[in-house]
Length: 150
Ligand code: ZN
Image 1 (tube, rainbow, N blue to C red):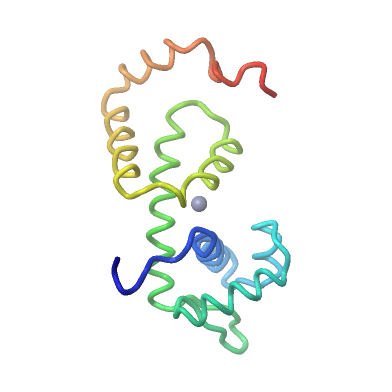
Image 2: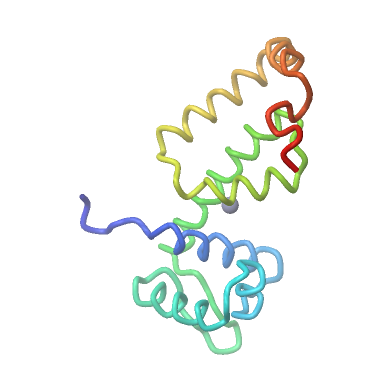
């Protein structure tokens, strides 16, 4: 293992969300992080503290939480992976809510090799729309496996 181990899965969730909030609003407040990750504010505070100690972010008076260079690099990598998964899942006519929910559920568990395969598969289908259509029409419906489950 390398000396600087990657952030844990839940740390990735936080970095991803903090990065998104800063991009959207210009700042990331504990209360917004808590509500968007559906966790208690106390959990956010302790994770933020830990991420600060690890050098991913710091707290600046007036500006609030800011990602460091290192934190931004990790957040950008996470965001890119999320976009790759979005590109892949959006090929299959799933609704946006399901896509978002499922990507959030799996993204931190995938190895780079798996993400690379999904990325290549997305590119393959994008370049071969006829093959994608053939696949989609081979299924019974847009949610053939999920039919009757909800
Ligand atoms: Zn994500």
